Image 1 (cartoon, rainbow, N blue to C red):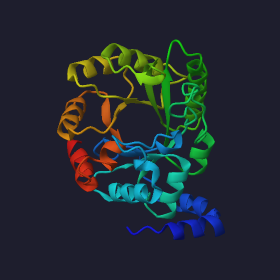
Image 2 (cartoon, rainbow, N blue to C red):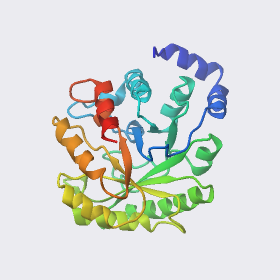
Image 3 (cartoon, rainbow, N blue to C red):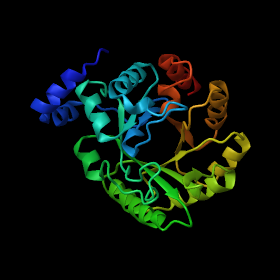
Length: 292
């Protein structure tokens, strides 16, 4: 797909209502297809000010490049949909790239990367009523908990209310929980089996019902530890991609092992597939699809 920034800006400036019109006519599909698996491409990092990929500090800072990578990924067989913030999804709607795709709105992006208030993660993105109004299929929220940071309590409370609001609309919400702490001022997540299990247990109990809650779970280097962590909940889960590393084969191996676990229903991956070390987006996406 050839993408013109000029064309997008022209539509946005002259016909902003075109975004809502594109959302209204978008062809939808069930969250889970016949195979009962999901491969979702994530692109909600920029709204948190997290533009780095590996050693490239501004890799996600070029919107045209990001959109080209996203549209390529969404065109590949086996890709079910996308997770992103409103600005990215609006562009994809205008490009016609979301037909027959699962669309997940990213809800809380207020905990900006590196900010003193990072763990008071306000819901500055999609609201449940926005996801319903636009005919999107689900929402996603990040829940980072630091027992020593009072900001985590505000996020925890807001997350519970978001779970309630999504359930009231019968819309799935993907909760991505972490136990974390600050190391030399930087928020660092604990990916040990005990910490992941504890975070999943906390996330599973949010709100007045868990009927529409899914979990978004990190995959550690030890398959047995991942299995122990996922045993903490019966909620359906998807695996998150994590940071880009030079050893893609090791990453695929960890995903392959975790995908065999009974609660796991798929992958939600962003930078690992959009910015692979060898630059071949199509090959990275096809490999991930093959794992499912």
